[in-house]
Image (cartoon, rainbow, N blue to C red; front, side):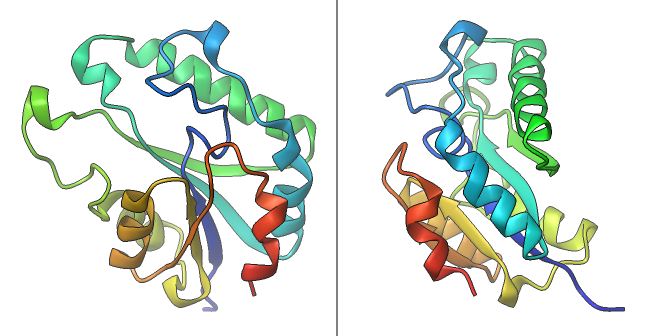
Length: 163
């Protein structure tokens, strides 16, 4: 059975506007619309699109898992309108200052490894786009190629880095 290829994506600063701190309310959750076209292009090239995000604000009690689900539902709906399917959203609800260390929080690679295993992904043909060094470290820890972008940078500017 042939393996899939995927582009894993950080959320804040990659798919929605980086606010400088946690996005705690729906009214502060602004999807970066300049990424619809490049992500559709990646999907059309056969890549699965999977979101990997640290959401330690839940551990801090700054927002609920219900609010987080609402944000992810809004993200999926916006992308669906543009013909883009988000295969899965993995998030870490932990924060080291509140519930100690965990294996899933980036820069650890457990969320990526779960996605690779669940969706039969060839990590050597897959990528992780993020706006923090911890994203690149997590991606490389799972055998992916990491692509570091600036917060809120259009993904279209790095499409040439994806085979």
